[in-house]
Image (cartoon, rainbow, N blue to C red; front, side, top):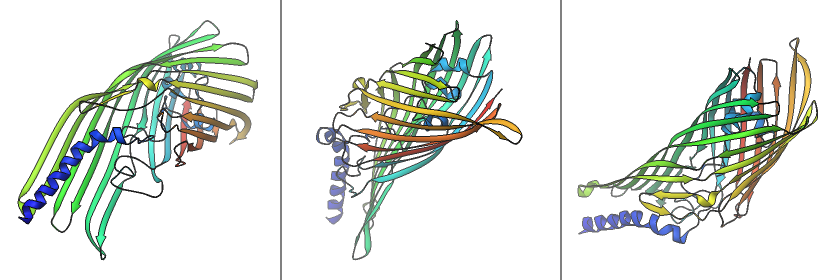
Length: 414
C-alpha cells in the first residue's frame, strides 16, 4: 500500500510538471529572463568589440574592425586592404526571476549572478576589384543561467534535493560585401546564418526512498537573415549611417524527456516528446552619426530600433504569451587619439568613453538599463590592441539588475 501511495504521489508530480508550464504564462510575468532570453539584454544588434564597447557601443558610423559586417557592412569599404580581428570577453549578469527560481519552486532573497568567458568574435576582410569582402563568426547570444542546487534537510540530515541548470548559445556566421559609390557614399549587404542550442534540466531527488523525477529539454536553432547599410559623407566633418536587419524565423527542434524512477517499486517511466517550432525574430533599423571635432577628437551616436511587438514564440506546438512592445537602444560616445612613440615606432593611444540607454521590450514591468563605458588601446600601423569595459544597472523591475562586460581585441591591418 505504501509503495502504491509513493507511485501515485510521484505521478501527480509528473502531471504537475506537464500542466504547470502551460498554465503559468497566464498567472506569472517573468519579465527580463524568459527561458529563451539572452543574458544582459534582449536588444542584440551585431556584436560590440572592445573599441566599440569603450565608446558606449557606438558602431554604426565607424569601422573599428571587420565586426562592422554584423552591424553596418557599408563600413567595410573604409577598412585597409586586409584585416584580421579577434575579440575575447568576460561578461557578468545578475538575475532574480527565471525558470523555477522565484517563480514558485525555489526562492532567493537576492539577485543571483553568472559570469562567462568567451572568444566571441573572429573575422577577416579583404579588398578585391573595388569590393571589400568579409567573413566573420560571432557568439551573438548566450542563454546560460545561474545554476541552482538546493538540498532539504531535517535535523541536519539531507532528505531531498532539487537541481536546475541551463546553458546555451547562438552563433552567427556572416558573409558581407561593400563598395564605395562615388566619393561620398558607401553601401554594403550581409548574409547571416545562425545556429545554436539550449539545454535545460530539472532533477528532483528523494534520498529516503530513492525516487528521482527529472525533466530534460534540448533545443537546436537555425535561421537566416539579411543585414545592410549605407554610410554617407555629409560634410568634411559629418558622416551619417543608415542600417537595417530583416525579420526571420529562427527554427527550433525541441526534444523533451520526462522521467520518473522508483527503484524500490521497480518503476521507470519515461515520457518523450518532440516538436519542430520557431521563434519569429523582429526586424530592426538604426541610425548612426560621426562628427569629427578635430583630427584627434570625434564624437559618435547610435540609435537602434527593434520591433519586438512582432516577436512570436511557438514552443512544443503552443503559442507562448510574450507581451512585448517596440524597444530601442540609444548610445553616445567620444574618442580622443593621442600620438606616442613606443619601441622607436610611431603609435597612437585612443581614449574612449560612452553612455547608453537600453530599453527592454517587456511592457510589464517596464525595464531599461543605463550603461557607462570606457576604453583605450595601442595601435601601430599594422597591429593594434584594444580594451574596453562597460557597467550597467536596470531600473523598472524593482530588482536593480546589473550587467557588465569587458573585452580585449587584437587587430592586424595590411
